[in-house]
Length: 449
Image: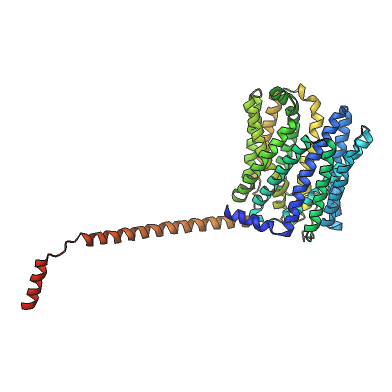
């Protein structure tokens, strides 16, 4: 643990890591609370189902398309310029939310702009962070960073609930502006020498697909199930809609699991940790399918889901795609890796009006079955933790065991010698001293004989 703390301290001292840390910390803690505020405003307008689907559709389409555009633009003008433009766009798009309107075209325009302000630089942001990490402690350092980010999301989210809409929007705009100023001050040369690879060739990689398919299944299942907690379950257990607070609670649980999971991923590898996370959330859904009326089961699922989400977020937003990319262009790996999460989010507003017609047993049984099914590709997937790191860890572990064994053997020998010396000293002390008469007789014998 001391070595881990030392590695984290060394990373923080590097200027490139400081800039990457500001990017991650500021971007995530800005966007997630902002999007929740935007959805709350839409709910207050009491728009129709088709109108909401159109608005959300424009948003997620803008996120996906702008991500591809941002990657192409970043390769032409440089990553630092792209990220600066991305943050500036975020400041203006946040401020535009103050122009609240019930006009559908205006709302669609704001929705598109918010999507672009996320997607344009999101893959480059993740790649920038990964490029400034060392592979030996990537999991732990990334886990601590993302954990602090999750805590920031929770704090910012709580602040938006206790302040009015205008104050929250102004605060988030200023927060994004602060992120821009810090990035401009700390940024380093962002031109890394990396091999170009096409999106099609990435999809042809067996190792990529073996992680991409389970991740896609999880995202689809998760966002399909989300409306059930917003409607049937939370009304049944808490008599009010507390989905926002539960989401914030899961962010806190996820933050803890990120730190632990990041540390373990550097020790035992990424693959086993991901499989364990799938097992956790699969068990949670299985319990809900058989005991959906139990509050204990419900809150147990929230705990398991929070732990699993912490691991998934760290592994599938940072670690795995960076490991698979190696020296190739990481932006493209991160873009494709983020697509399941971005596009699957659109499932929740589509499904929401129909959740009351689906029995909970069938919904959760369906989720549990497909999550356990998703583990199958992971069983044959290669470990993404670099082989050199694993060999170094094995060598260090062997050396540590050898040193401990040598110290143990040395201790035994020293103990044995100490016992022997003590025994001899004791024997010498126990030998009787010659009486004075024997000494006088010996002297007389030596004198006359």
